[in-house]
Image 1 (tube, each protein chain N blue to C red):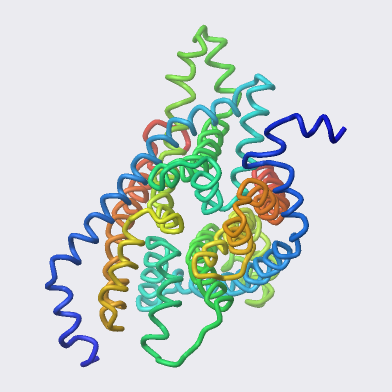
Image 2 (image 1 turned 180 degrees about the vertical axis):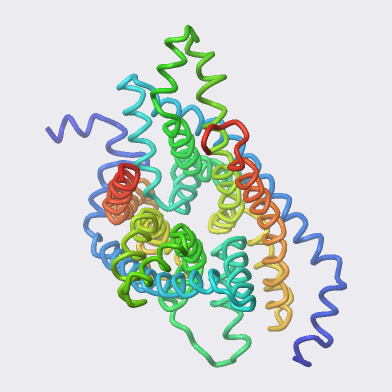
Length: 235
Length: 228
């Protein structure tokens, strides 16, 4: 068997050679640690994006002009400039403005994806709120529902159906975008993979395993998004 | 604020080297994203039609491609194009972005085609329209209305994500800016450079987003579709 394998050239040399795979799996804990950091940044970032997105989304449906304008500026700025610049501003500019202030790279990652995807989630929340006619809230209140009761039983269940599919889609994009912290040595899955691959030149196998890692994190969410979309369409 | 706006920043803003550097960066950014947009529009249309088609082999091939690629970071695809495929930096960025964006555009196109109910399709065929005629006159007009704004706003994502090319050393706007930031090393200068680059991206992307939003309002006002 090994004799046969030895005769097949591309298994012995080239970008996907067997020795490269064995070297990778001997060091697989490096990638595992990176994946854990990616998961950490993604989950904290998602919490931040949801909180910011909800607050800004509600602001953009406000009756007052000032919060509405502030929400607009926030959304337009973050949606129309690259995440990478925002991360670089946090990484390079903040320590220049406050000398001596040290922000750990993981925190930069959380704030970076949190603020960036917060802008997208704000738009999702705004669309969700606006899709429910004001008449429904007024009708519920006139029927003796309290404000909280009306929200809980009438508005939020309907809004959730509209909001949930694009929200899970944003969660997928957020997980993928945590990879930009690799460019500032973030220690995440992409960084771990890239620095391992770069050190020994085992790019092929490493990128396949890194890709598999991201796929395993994102695919279940993507499937769930599709289910939610189908349910929304049927309803 | 005083230290922010005196001497060094003004001096830097008067230096033509800044504008030449950023100008070349912008050119490469536009080149990478322009090429990616054109290529992924073509490839995405093919993929989307494959997935929409009733031929199992074609549609499964397209589905697999789309599902795998959509769940991978764009940065990874750019790194693979550079280190594994061995392409030069500018092409690695273009191909990496194209591999990703095609999958997204394919999904938008399939969504647009699916939004036209099969009843309309059957009605057209029963009235003697050929496949191409039903596509051209019945299915495509409302489908294009549905997908155009989404495709245009995907272009914004391509322009933003072309900044990932700095990871492989392509001298696009973001990387040029970072290099210039090291040349003018003073804090106020570095911050100004980042603000200037952000503004450049913002002006381009905001224009495109505004066009996409206008299209959406105008198109959903009913041209070419029945009942929106």
